[in-house]
Amino acid sequence: MAPRSNTHLSSRLCVLAAFAASIGAWSAAALAGPTVTPINLGPVFYFDSGRASALSGDGTTVVGGGNIATSPYSYHGFRWTLGGGAEDLGGFAGEYQSGAVGVNFDGTAVIGWSYYLDGTQRGFRWTAGGGMEDLGALPGTDYTESSGITNDGLTVIGTCVSISPPSNQGAFRWTPGGGITPLNVAPLAGGSVAYAAAISGDGAVIAGQSDTGTSTAHAFRWDAVGGTQDLGVLPGDDFSYALAMSADGATVVGASGDFTGSDVINNRPFRWTSEGGLQDLGLLPGAYRAVSSFVSADGSIVWGRSIHIEEPRGRQFFWTESHGLMELNAFLNLLGVDSGEWTIGDFTDMSDDGTVLLGWGTDSEGNYTDLLITGVPAPGSGTALLLGALCIARRGRRG
Image 1: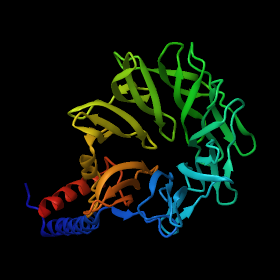
Image 2: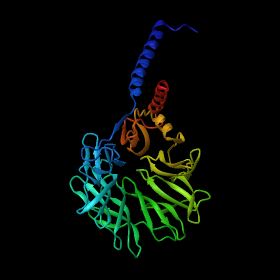
Image 3: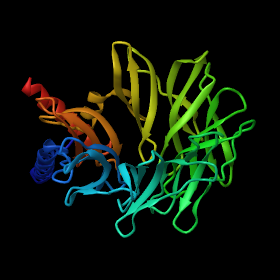
Image 4: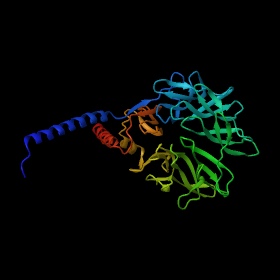
């Protein structure tokens, strides 16, 4: 074989040197990793009283509830942005408490609950232009709970129940033009009522649970084409319920279990897709039950809580298609998140593209605060894998 020319070797060395330089610069940027920002609700709210519950799909807006600084016994819903801080959402006339539980994609519409002085709870939708609007209640009911909102903020779903006899309950749909109406979702065969837990971003798909004419309920997925679909139960179980759904409506998560008398003795987290059916996500070592309660917009990441005998509060677990089941710290390493002075306790929500996380944590003195983590690479990406390796190495050098 003829020897390579010096010109060819020189050009290869130049390419390698340029590539190494670019990797070095990229690695230096990656080493900084995601940014962890405490969510300061002051001066409107007591800074450490907030409990964030949801993050907008674009990752710009956080909603939840907290104690008003000027009236510590008043608990109000809030809307928070990185640039604008906390905004008090107020409440209905004569109310004394409110809280926000959901927000649309761009953060312009918020849903939640508010109590009147007589104890009646009603769901609300808040917008900057219209303020807080009482969603009302279905005939024969007086207690309303909102559970989902579409990306455009124009459709809200939830459940209405009656506090006083006769007992009455049902799922609802609310729109600005049509007000509150019964949700046109037929119960499963043999059942009489369906509960709505989640709605897709475009409003075309709804997930929840329905009775089946027996003493147990099953999770369902509904759309206008296929109607109400029974998602079934995991092998050996007799009930299931849905808690969350991906923004595209293709993935539903929740729990499946069985009863012995009136005691739930088994709860296992599931992930459902039309291709794979009901999938058992398993349990962390030492756990005896778990529930999937969150799912990413594309359905690839599921998280929830597992219960352990030695830890009554339990632990948060995560599941991804490429990595399977893992604990919180493993998930943090996967994403390259170094929380610094904060010990992260839980994650609450995730932006649709996966680059922003909402959670909470405590500092070295045990003080609680909600946390916004930005600049997160999508799990499974090359960036995430590099960040994870760098983060682990960096933590090792500290030890």
